[in-house]
View 1 (tube, rainbow, N blue to C red):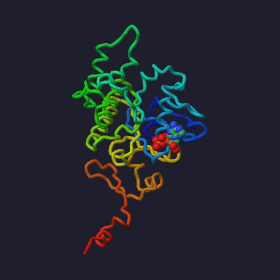
View 2: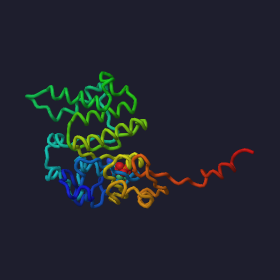
View 3: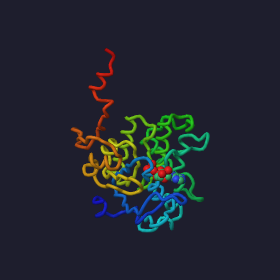
Length: 280
Ligand code: ADP
């Protein structure tokens, strides 16, 4: 990945092979997460995106190869030390029953607390800022399990932001969100990277949202990284066909110059066919 090779890299994998029991999902993956950038992982269902994220977050132990965090093998760290450096939002997290939004977001501060230093002004500030940024402050005292899917998702994002780490890994954070809220969230992630120097690795489903916001796009298929680089280089009709088996035209948005894909219509959707099917 050209964008990251020349820069320092705080999180990377070398020869990573990982999976579940005797099932191998990732095959010999070398991956460097670009510093201070928003990297988006794309790939068909089952291509290994979550497995890669989990292995980079130390939730899953590699079968072979290793993950290095700040130059040291991630499995050598104490959990608390990892939580100081790396914030992780897994897919479909569940909150303890009855927990309020403020309490959930406050959980992001656990790694910063010690026996002799309980809740501090700094914790308070971090929680308030995270809630404002993720726009959950208006319902801070409500119970998480009584919220809509989209509101709940924003609470989890606020929790990760409250953790205040330089490295943030998010697995499909835009699930359940309205398109406008998805765009707002992605703009927030871009700002975190570009204005605050955070390093973000995010799994997304929506190809066009990914192409519109990512600094680096990584396309996975069958447990391997097939393409990696800036969207202009990676988001091509040929790569979409190869990775997703998707027939699509790729054009460029006039406002941003970013690539956008338009899936080809099957014959059933062609205007002539529709005309033919209309009652006389
Ligand atoms: P993606 O995130 O790209 O959809 P995953 O990394 O979730 O892909 O899954 C990759 C493969 O690993 C899939 O075939 C999936 O069924 C399998 N898999 C995922 N999680 C588990 C698990 N906990 N146990 C066994 N197999 C799993």
